[in-house]
Amino acid sequence: MNICLYGSGSRKIDSIYTDAAYELGCKIAENDHALVFGGGDTGMMGACAKGVHDNGGKSIGIAPEWIGNFEPLCEECSKFIYVDSMDERKNKFLENSDAFIISPGGIGTLDEFFEIITLRKLKQHDKEIIIFNINHFYDTMIKMIDEMGDKGFLYKQEELFKVADTIDEIFEIL
Image (cartoon, rainbow, N blue to C red):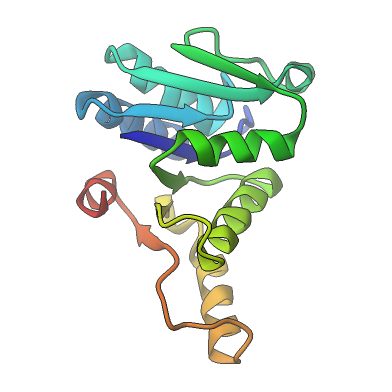
């Protein structure tokens, strides 16, 4: 299975998050899955990729070449797909992935998350989407989404994503 990880590339992240991302990468490789990610060598993406590579796993990095001006790209990827735009990048994530894990991140991660759940809502895919809620990072966002549903702004007839607090929970869902 190709598992796409959305997450920050920031170098300023507390180790509680990057350690969990590294362990997730280890588990992805140990279960003979491949990592699909934004190709970054730092932050959540880089930590997860390092866990995959340290355990003999495979990874597919997807990014525009110019993103290297903002963050270093991972050189250990089994395959790297260069694209022209961030929209093309998100399309390639969808094409090349069987499931999505949303790890802690910033605006870019939220953009990817909301697009992938919107596409699922619109029945453009039926792939599993899991929020990796490390250290309760996404509690406030989940509460906001619940409130939007409670107030009638969202249809709640289906579950668009699941929440996992641990790596074991992620793999139970998968």
